[in-house]
Image 1 (cartoon, one colour):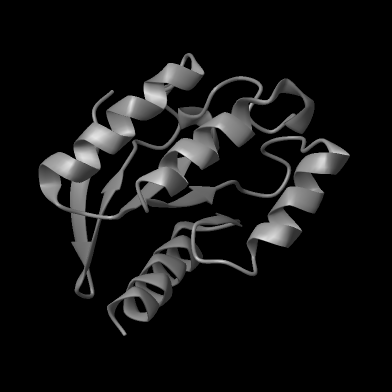
Image 2: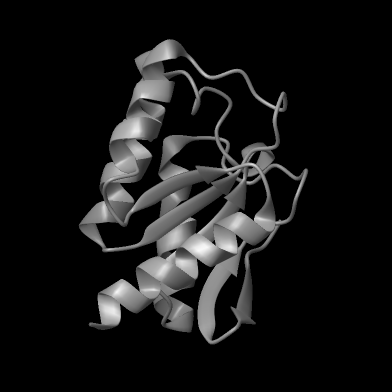
Length: 127
């Protein structure tokens, strides 16, 4: 699977394909970073299926490594995760709550909400 560049309502980001695997290991986050740099965007929209198998289990450390690396490069990540699609560990739910305070990571039930968040955080970045 490849990431595609999307321009919606003036905000550009890279997007994964729904229901397709993309990251088989934490190191695959480098592909997201490369795509963002290559296309000069600072946002990514991925789907639950695009992430590593243990991403939503905070005890695995995978989410922390991926999110830290993206944050180091100022890349915002919106994850679309429909209700019932993935089981979050209790600590992951806490992470999501904490991250809502900042502009770098959000989890959304629908693509439209994820795009709106990318637009809002992009606007805040431009100020």
